Picture: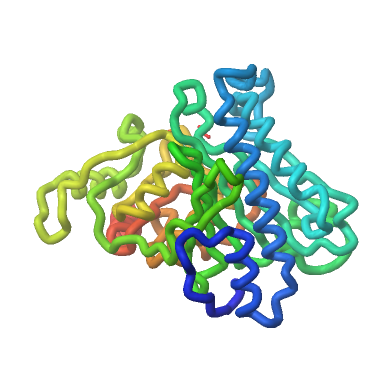
Length: 344
Ligand code: FDP
């Protein structure tokens, strides 16, 4: 990710201005990445607006399709996917988009000549919460595309995208809509809240740092019988009284990865989604769920592993690859990972 020193951020600064100031502090910047983040911001605003109409217009419920994972696609999953594709259709920066909703990358031929970024997306994360007006989010990861010419296969795409993410983040659509992103540890993690009255994201949480200890863990414990021994032991240790570690922790699990990890980012603690007997590779997707959230948490001083290996060290072999995920305050993730390495 890029190295730059940011101006002192002022609460209430508009996203556009924040990006402009960040660029000015980085003389070799071309402005492309800022333009791309603005396109992402526009998509986030449009999805936020769509969500605010759910229940009033006919956009809730299943679309009748299944996605690449064989999961039932909600109408809003498909709409959010379209909104993102539409956002990148101009500007010449993004020749290919990989999304949870499409088995193959979406190619944007008009951007092929000049485009040098591939965006990996979960357009609407946690969509099982939609029917109950619960929290949902969108997750994005931007990687640089090397080489030249059109990308012709998945293997070629993965071999040509940069290992490092040049930008990563998410939108969380809760009582208010927030954008949280990082362009790497040197530039930190910043949160913007959408002011719907002016249609702008305003800086509300500059330089977010994940607390080194928290009070919460998030996990779908309904599947604990299907977990391996290490995560089971780890969760038991979170429930045990331990004054030094501030335990027992309380459980908070909403069923939307973005909302659950956002809480951990702000309040500390750990989110875990281990491998299960049903999903031995884990359930969550590496390229557009685990990796971008890992980039954000690490840039905020936290950590993320698959129970053994740092998420950001994993080498992807497929666009829709799954992974177990342990993410949050560094001491908690390190403890879970030590157990994973020793107990299995
Ligand atoms: P969803 O399928 O509703 O999009 O992305 C997968 C995900 O949600 C995460 O957002 C969420 O944390 C997880 O699945 C929930 O899975 P469980 O129902 O197995 O807990």
